[in-house]
Image (cartoon, rainbow, N blue to C red; front, side, top):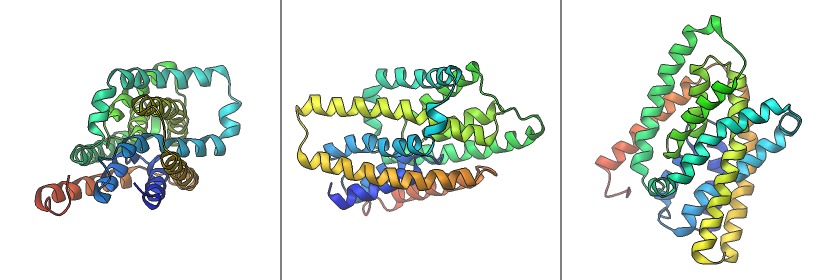
Length: 263
């Protein structure tokens, strides 16, 4: 991985992190095309670069995040707990998926179909929409979020789908998804950095530079992405169609143009 690739992947991460289209999935496909997917630093980068996007949430929502009642933090904890436990227990399996763009393509396609179906259900219940996220709803959101351990599924998408199926309004859904990214990605980044250091007993200066550049890029792109996402609250169908298109496109590449782009 070189510095330009680090910046490009960081920008891609920041743009896609909060949309329900899988930032990790996009980076895996992009890294595969760049020919750097199998590099050791890439495996670390795909997870740790998300921390820059998380910092953009903390920066933009600092007043809402740091000055909440205990009830809010309990709900974030309850929703984060399942994915943290499953992520720890299934660490080897999730690492296996990190270099499998075909899995990403299938996840994007299936996830797009799910989002379109959920939108139909949600619109039918428009008259009965509720705003609150209870402790039970938070736990169910956390269970849904476990599916995002498979790259291409999307943490944001699972949160949004879980909220919508429980009749939570769109703005509350998006903001809660933003807040959930802080503990989940923060813990995942720390664990990934620890594992990488434990295996190699050190970080090279270039490793640190690549991670810093990527995170700075994802931080800036993340702030832009969040502001754009908040404005787009009518529905999520566009993201569903996009996922279906992208997943189908790369499936076609895999089966018809495999000699040109290695998957």
